[in-house]
Length: 308
Image (cartoon, rainbow, N blue to C red):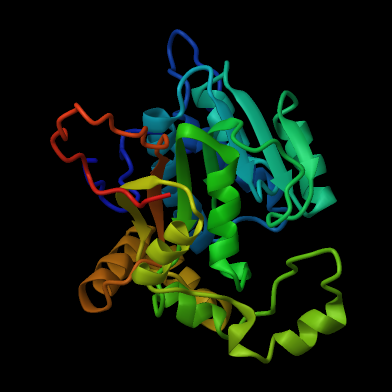
């Protein structure tokens, strides 16, 4: 798989919210820009420069991967779909795809239903999804894994939902990245319906409220899934991430110096602390290898895969 630059954006493409439908004089905006415009409209108090930059990179890389791995009539599942940004992008790129979404938050699902009316949306937990196993051509998940303590369980669920030769697009943070360090001071997330506000409050004082794993642990989680697989590549999104007071300072700098200030921060972060705050791991579920007959000769070794 050809490596991509983190969030490579075509500077000739526009993110203007008004440019969504093409005309003879003005071509339509690229799908990632339409998804960004939809997210922007959900921010009642306006979108900060950092969030705008962050989402533009997210949707650009997501768009590139959907173009490559989501076939025209695929069954596409977005785990932790939220308000439907990923489903909207998939619908723009592959209007004939069968779109499914799962999320624990009913209000987010209501937003997703309005944004992508044709999607089949389900309310439920990522660890016990009310979905058919081995049914999907592509399983996508963005921004939810580090909420969970047991990445082995997540990998087992994601791989079990894929058909043979299906693709998992799994967005992950690297351990001790800027994103990891930023979230150490953040409010604990809601993971299940039983996760009440008092429980989240007390858990917020624990460094274990968010989970970050090493690259080796991610591979081990996939191996523990019990499903044969092949890692096709890792696609970076960003090095840089911030929140809280630091985000306020960064936004002031971006307003004064332009969005290129955030590109510069990402390059500096990548040079001196090259750990991704977000990247996609692209994994193929391999078909079970058939038993080799006695008179067959061993074939040339294919790329290394995990055994079932």
